Amino acid sequence: MPVPKRKVSKTRKRKRRTHWKLESPGLSICPNCNEPMVPHRACPHCGYYKGRKVLDTE
Amino acid sequence: MRHRQKGRKLGRKKGHRELMLRNLVTSLFDNESVRTTEAKAKEARRLAERMVTFAKRGDLHARRQVLKHINDQDVVKKLFDSIAPRFEGRAGGYTRIIKIARRHGDAAPVAILELTEKSKEAEEKEAKKVTRTARKTGEVVGEEKE
Image: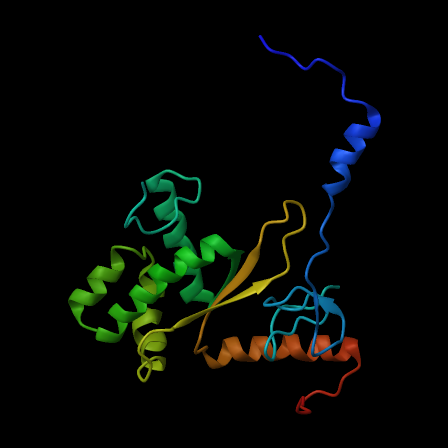
């Protein structure tokens, strides 16, 4: 069975992984309370979505 | 290939899935709004819209067709007598899905499925929610937002 000839060095491994990144979620600002929120969803902070929805949290 | 295959399986066998959706739709008509996962809301919407269409027809056959899906006589009565008339001037779009924040615990996308035209009582309940939040955020109730 074919196998790698050399162990992958730390540098090489790290270089390969430089492209593994977390992406930040695309957030927008709630037009009602100015808190960041996920677009197209009721705002978890004030509970608004195109008017009124959801109970407030606590 | 899944050509022309409609609907979601929702990780359940047919019987389980169908009963779950029927229960969900029954609750929707009973309470005017339900909170579930997005996928279930979208599936339940299909059934709910169909039931309203039957209810608008209003005849005995339509009522029996609905009873095949909704196993609660009282809810069917409410659907025919109080829900269907509200939708007289509307051709479809009887329900609305509002996506809300992901569920804590399993991060499942959650949504609220509700009737587009709600009864007076249900709207009063909603209004209470507004007042409660408004008090908390220190905003004046009844004032129009720009």
